[in-house]
Length: 185
Image 1 (cartoon, rainbow, N blue to C red):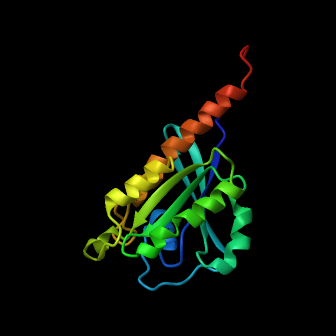
Image 2 (image 1 turned 180 degrees about the vertical axis):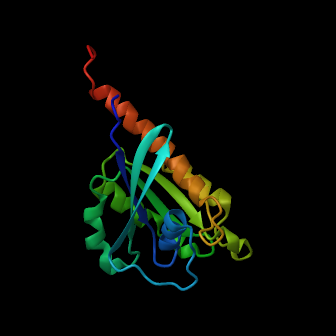
């Protein structure tokens, strides 16, 4: 019996300081939420093994620092990324306005066909909202990105965001694999 090799996918989390990138990552990998904010210094990393669509997958999720001073460190992590999450805080208009900066970095340093998902985080703070769902969706559509709103605190849509995105990344991966196979096999 032939055992299928584990597929490794690399995802990056991008976005400004305190938008909830680390909280998103920890909620997904460890099912925890930390109330206190601890800024990421440079880059953090977590891995998760899962069975998805009858495939054995290892997700490497890289949590990048949002501060400008770490940008040169973050640039090298774009290489080999299969997917990029650009996260903003729905209660912080400036974090939404800064999305262009993260897209510019992705366009400059990642593969041209890397998939991207825009994530509006902190939906549990809906009463303090500064960015509407429609604005997020419209921006994502204009840039050919996927879109979802999440709450890392409550766990709302965090796993769904990863699963939806993983489905697209896996589809892209399998299409490329088929193109690489010689026709006589």
